[in-house]
Length: 318
Image 1 (cartoon, rainbow, N blue to C red):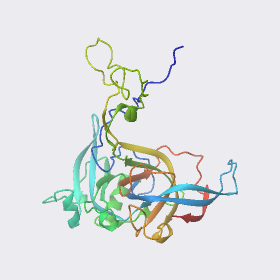
Image 2: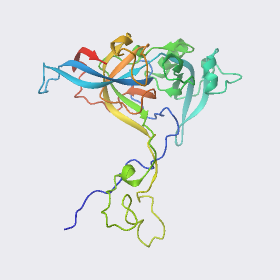
Image 3: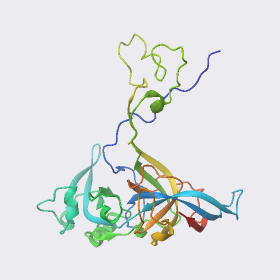
Image 4: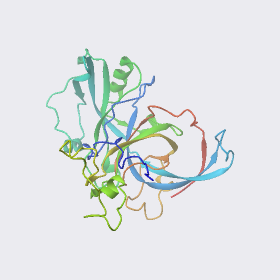
């Protein structure tokens, strides 16, 4: 009897190569009427146990106290350092101008070369969209890194609202409370943990062959047919694994707080340290290892079944 099964190694994520940037790039943003950033940079700290009252109307545990795992994401304020202006052309949008603040933080020199001369926001007129250029402040978290992560974040509101908001925040800090609230549904963009060079069994889930197999057990039986006389890219082979850019959709913010002692055990979080800034508690796991930067954005395709008051937090157990 022939056993049929899906191919080993999904073609959904291909090519399986390392991410180009340590902080993901996002190209699709949700539409928002209020002028505010639609994303925020955070640092994964660790996980906690959350005890909460289940307020979901159709849940079998409605009204009861339940426990679930959640992830702590430390979010020091972002620094708004510039704006990127885009204009429509035949194949989409392209950047036509960039504006930077008059005084740039000296730490930013680790990431980019400072422009000798920059335009003023009022000098740019012919554009269709504008994004806010922000960078993280890794020196405020125990990551051991001093190099800021620079990224362009979309803004909500009309063109006039965006320009007005940029003039207000340029050169200033933006707290996470200005972007997200407790109960908000978000998308988490991150880089997975790197696994190094791995074989076909771990990399693609190829079954281990029987002990009588020829040449090898932890490998594929053939590289393909005689013709075409080349190895197809769909054939599972050894190579680099991990450090891929991935997006997790519809993760809910369970809590937002300023007192890091609530989520930090005595002695600090293992392989991280002490949470000293504003933090988010995100339901479930978050992609990547501890200390890695993640980009949090408003959900691009929100699950309407997730209510903002679905859970009432009773306690957090680090």
